[in-house]
Amino acid sequence: MSENRDEYNRAGLIAFAFTMAFCFAFFFYLVAVNKGVDLAENVVDPNAPVAEGAAPAFDITQVKEPWVSTPELVEYGKKTFAANCAMCHGAEGKGDGAAGAGLNPKPRNLVEGKWTQGEGVTSLFKVLQNGIKGSSMASYAHFKSADRWALVMYIDSITQNKSKEDPAKVAEFAKTAQ
Image (cartoon, rainbow, N blue to C red; front, top):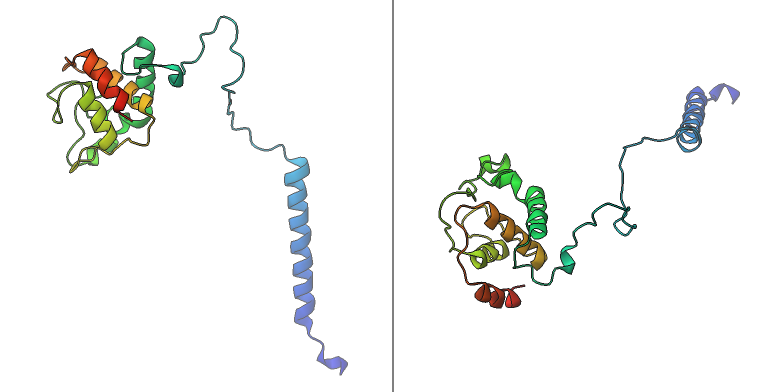
């Protein structure tokens, strides 16, 4: 009966033991010895106190009337535009963004030309709210209303086709626009 020993089990046991020892040593190295990878991410706490002499960050939620253009609002809109719109409309808003090259119809040049969905900041706001059916212009209804107004103010600052709307009518519209 001792002639019937299975030699393959011994080789499997040795392979299993070596694998377990290697895994244990590897995990020990990862947990106790290795210092990790520094991605050089400098995370800044937005609630941290502002250093003396530094300008405080612009807080869009504190703006009472985002439909009234201010330099701070336009600058905030520019940053929002760069993060969300420049890929299609281009960094300068000329419709030459990298992602826009593959779209049909091409993204609009926001600097030159007539507005296709109506003139004025209320029409621009409605486009951001609803998008444009039959085009690649998606709705940005998921943005806060103040962020959409900041985008509108930035677009109005770069376009040659400036808004000529009555500020009172814009304010009346803005109070109902969400």
